[in-house]
Image 1 (cartoon, rainbow, N blue to C red):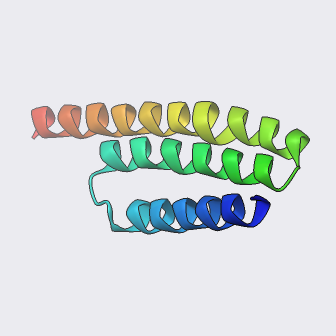
Image 2: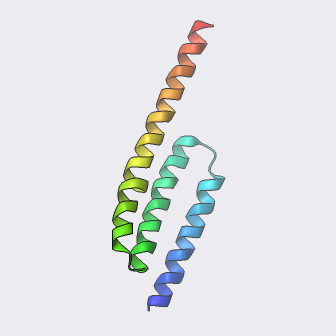
Length: 86
């Protein structure tokens, strides 16, 4: 049973990793990165590394997407203000 869980967890991580790379829109990519982080958390739980999984929850599914969304919003507002000046 453990082997099946490992194969499924690794497969989900690989598929979501490829989805992150192939996603071109930054907002959608941020969402996919969040799901990828959640898949990593599940993989780490299956690998019996709960302390690393907890850290991964905080970093990849909460903090990193929030930072990305804030950055995307800030860049968009700077671009708009530059266009208005021109």
